[in-house]
Image 1 (tube, one colour):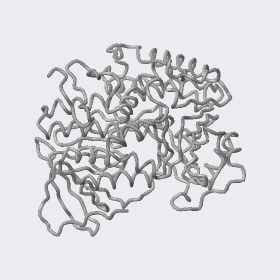
Image 2 (cartoon, rainbow, N blue to C red; image 1 turned 90 degrees about the horizontal axis):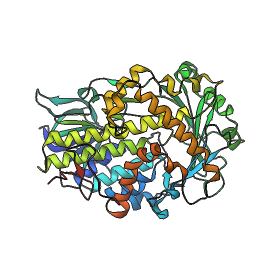
Image 3 (cartoon, rainbow, N blue to C red; image 1 turned 60 degrees about the horizontal axis):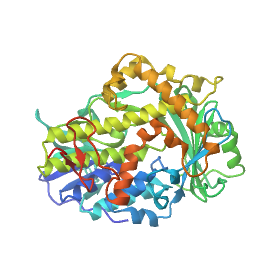
Length: 503
């Protein structure tokens, strides 16, 4: 591990083009993408890497799209992470497990139709070290406490160094990528809006091994619905498996009171996962020797930027993790932020227009995943279960739908009718029915095409991920990109800034 840059031996306020708060995937991505354009970037993180983090299952767009754009794909490939060719689910009307393969995408070649199951401590450190190599001034053990701002814009941050010294740094832009526990996100967009529909908790830990699915799907994530919620089973190494249960918030007290007992009981409630772990001991290797409880609440912000400051990653929004979209959404949002920052710093386009494009696209992507996940939950039929009854489309509250409509502004569906009374619930129900039908055809697939791509909702949800992957693999999308909205912008060829297609 490359050591952090020593703190300069001076007390004067330092100045940069961009200050990034947080060194996880979102922070490393935006810092690297801005540094690639030659701008001066300071990245501050209160922890020292490598550090533990949950969220181990990646999508191909992150591996072959984002990592190629940042120039780190080969290093990720050499890290020895478990190859993931798709996903396996026991979910929906069919009580037998079904699976999908990334290799059956109609647009992307088989050699790049895979992702990885990663130990986040190692993956995140690779991204952060890459940022260092690109010239980012990375300082660990530095706690940001507040922003420096006036009536016009955010000007910088105040932070405490590893020795307790108080410091201040100024920049044209501050990026908050410090995660769900951010101390400064409230300076943009006010309070978070929480989803009642997805307000769950996760209880998770690790086993020192475990059985694997038959090859070539032995690296797949396995997600199984059971009466109290759903369980993930992620093979990280031959001797390490991540196992977690997502259940309703009513279980919070018991889970926090005795996490290990709650975790074991939930695993025993799902016979497929219980059988995969038969005779396997709990991991004793730090940091995998703990059972943790996390409030797995989905949320968003009414605003994602203000002059001088932008949010990315979990500081901006979070959505239910069942489709392994967490790192994708975080790094995608960070890349959008980098495009806006680069375009503004380089004088290519006016600041307001750059960041309006960032926000519209980030909201759009979040909205697509939110809608798809509501439909995905709805397709699971278990009338006996309180958990699943409460996660039907009909239980998406009117207040939440109103807040969601305000969030996406009609963009998620590409249809302004989203804002019309009654339309969101009707469309969510139709999407759930459509998704249920294509999943039902998976067992009879001829192996040449993934029936999931016959679902309009599925194609729309993963469209931007496919475009990102195409940019990494082919140097650009296979089709010309159109603006998301009238008068909107499109990415540059290298994906690092915005262009006006009218010019």
